[in-house]
Length: 85
Picture 1: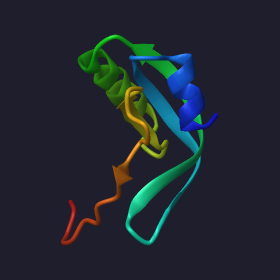
Picture 2 (picture 1 turned 180 degrees about the vertical axis):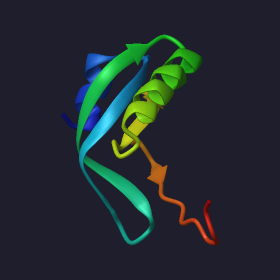
Picture 3 (picture 1 turned 45 degrees about the vertical axis):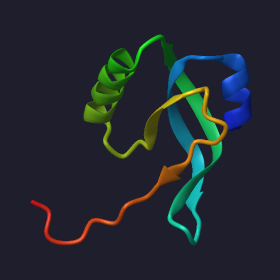
Picture 4 (picture 1 turned 90 degrees about the horizontal axis):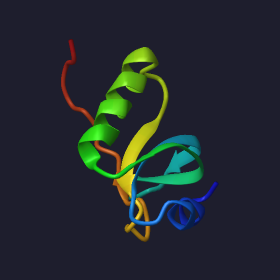
């Protein structure tokens, strides 16, 4: 699905989505070419709880919690500098 399709299918909802196909452009924006909606929610705390559960099971999955009132996802990729433990 595309973001516009998700917005039409789940108007005014919080959605937990998975990026099936995505890339980063020269402005460090994450472009979601193909996404799969996993669940819809009426509030963000429930959506984040579901995100945490799925992320804990498989941290390699690219998951996002977004509200469908956004015209574009507008996800900015931030680079980590330094040592992570």
